[in-house]
Image (cartoon, one colour):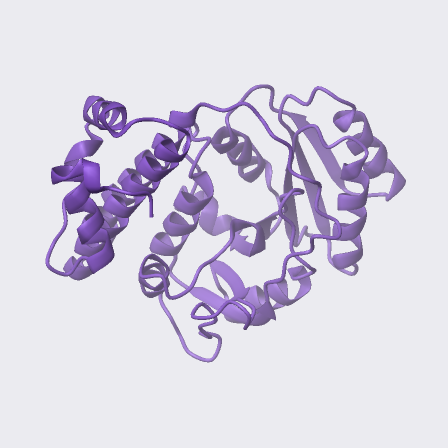
Length: 314
């Protein structure tokens, strides 16, 4: 029987918790021919053993792949390249959603969609746009996201595997920060057909594995800037919409740079140190705006560039 869905699950130091994660997902996909691809990221505990035990315990069609110290982008690519299902989806144990897979899979098949996603809860004011009753292109959805009208989460999306492989919709292997946002944008921009189903995307905190503090480089946030620069290059290739490209270059990218600036300030770095780091990377040249740029972003860019003593984290 043909595998309908590949469920890709990255895991690091989850221990016994991976059993509950797999049990929850397995209960959600009853009646669907599923394969599980479990990607271990250099776990220091018994995650690997627990994952293997769980696969046997629940009788799953699954395998565990050791990814060593690979960065997240490379790890998730390993999952995609090993996927044999008609469709693929990601489950992030520390950021899980309530059961959406059956509805997404049905919608994907009925609408022949490359990318499927759900609706945001009505509680998220200003972000509960409903596109399920109308046809919307990937570029239109991309524009809605960067304009702040709505949002998507990689942990609540589904992709046609043939689309992923034929269009080479992969993560950047060297990416460990910003990889999810970049992948969402890339998948939307290259898709021939996307679809929003009526399923509401709701977090399932009851089974989420608690997040753990980890040592990280404060300047790792620069990875988000790099990821948005790659999307800017992709836009030049796949879109003829000048306004969209201008909005991304003169609003989204400066906003991303300033978000990084804010993070560094909050970590105790002085603005002169941050400015020097930006200049070394060439990111200071990205802080340009146009007449159409959001006023608050335009003001923040001006203050940071010309009156840094006036700049405050947003």
